[in-house]
Image (cartoon, rainbow, N blue to C red):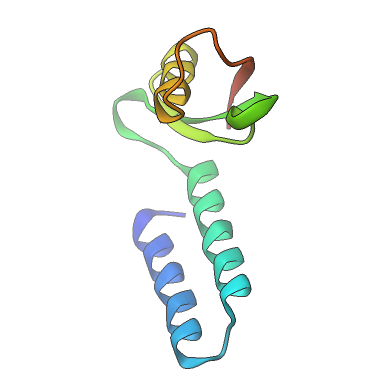
Length: 94
């Protein structure tokens, strides 16, 4: 899914919410589904790719875009405002 398709799908979900055809929970689920599909299909420029953190604690399930596994680990730490080595998690390319 490209960026334009993702945006159109999110806009459609929001229109349905605004018109009363969808409740907040259903709208959230649709938007999350669009974002997850976009992330897993993501083909970035300059060698970036999506990585997902797995493990215990706050890092589990986070998906970031990075140039390498090491950069993805650093980005997860930065997003969570945690020092390197304070969280235990692995990152896998999606």
